[in-house]
Length: 329
Image 1 (tube, rainbow, N blue to C red):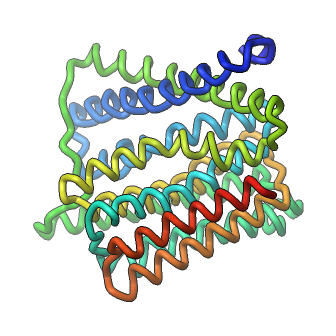
Image 2 (spheres, rainbow, N blue to C red):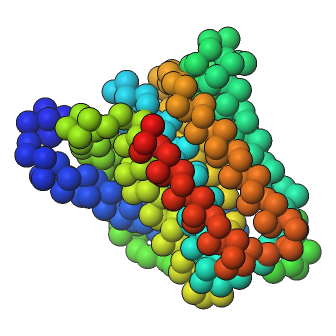
């Protein structure tokens, strides 16, 4: 596929990039639907399915792209895709939702979720820049990846434990998903077909983005921060807009922040555990910007326990400024 894309017309390459995004997004949808149905038939509680399979489903596109990029040694794309997606989630996804409707922020989101998201970004910065675990500066190594995956497993177990305790106490669960049961054969087709679509979509996206970067004289880092990160963040944006229109803006906020945690711990954890990822100075700067944006959103949320239209507009303008900065540099 890489040879075909490298020799194809640039217009066709753009079409293949779009096709890659479509395969990633629809593949993730089918995979989640099939997996959720099978889990429900095995009598797994809906809340656990929602916190694991469904929640991770929106991060599958980032996973496919970053793992594919890591396997072919395109490390700049692996890191910039995740960091760019997290910045997009934090500023655009939450910003658009707050423009549609005021986002009332739960206390738990302020004291646990947003700070933990910032801690994950700090860990990524420490592992990649200073080499805390693998003792290799500017490299996210095998051991770093394993530590991130262990933290991810612990985070999921903590969420599930809290959800089950709240469920036993009879409290309403905002994260609980209505799981649609479909025939077993159809579930298996969805799982296999969805996984295949994600794999093919990941390869298409990485190869097409690399070719576009070389043709336009853009760096892999810039392509990852813009085109690829926005494309792989479309599930989060669509999910959050739908939630906001249904007056479920708390779910929209949780989806965006949760996806940021998954992207760092799960996506880069898997990618670096498979193959060490080299950091560049631009990655360090972008992670610092992500931390600053996270702090801004946390301040917006903590001061009034809500994010309104004015804050949402400020967030979108800040993202526009960030986009202009990375294009100019």
